[in-house]
Image (cartoon, rainbow, N blue to C red; front, side, top):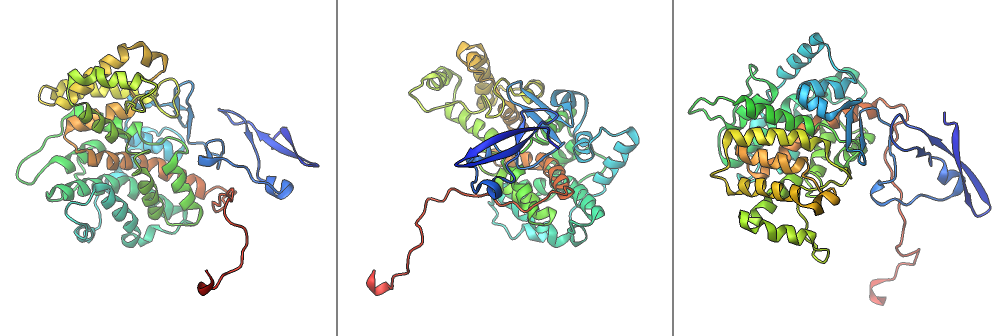
Length: 429
């Protein structure tokens, strides 16, 4: 219960609203009974000032540049841990023991294959289908292949669905990639770790051996880790809203993937690469920096600054380290795009304007560079984001399902349309 409250006066009514204090972040004003007591709604487009749930999973402090998963700073997790251990942490609330982690990794590994009939499902898409379109469709269709894990009221079925989604998303994403480039599907290998297995399914072909470079595997693992969860963003809120209706887990995750596809959300790293293509050559960088600094020009550099992080993106520091390692391994001499990226980073970081405005390169800037260097087309950037974020969506979904206060989502509106009027027969209009 709250021991603080606020008083709101509406006409001749005075309403007392409870104030809750979280373990971190600003206090929250409880307006649950505002409509019943005051006959008014609140107006908050985008819900940027509204807490729609309580959660124990992820906390962000944008002013401090802080991202915590279950209390653990993201930079520590990215540096000292690996993706499947972070998955365990998000799902179950604590870091696993060695035995618990081994058991979890085994369960995920044993579920990486997809139902063989799903191969036929892929062939229903056009040969040039965008991998995200394929991903939305196939993940949504998983409920047609895995009937034994769709009952949201069965705790064991929820657990099975969670493991299946985490295990099969890399396989499905790799299949979407292979299908889009006309290459045969590659089955998962249980002797490889999570990130290495994904890279193998994406880049190996039956005609020759493919060895996964450990530096690339580590960089991919970090991309997964740094995108695993990000509090109540648009796609996570979409998953929670779909979940509130009682939809099965595969439908909920498909809804999250569909939302992530929006260029304002999951397409940020792709937008960075498109910006680098627009710049084209190193000698044009000053021109675009000048445009970004011109207050009369609407142009802005993609991959710099962040809507939530007002200081710096805590994920970017770790991602930069991986970007440097990957570029040192693969080189940039033959890739003009990466040459532009490295020089743009250098010039922007040296410019006082960007430092004053706190427009530092964010995680999307560096992850886009890494994926480009690895050989992924930009059409695969958002599917990779989706497979990484799946564990966050599932963790949020599981938390919501077990919440005794769960209600179906039903936002209100500020109606500005016509009031009641009588129907006019067509011959009199």
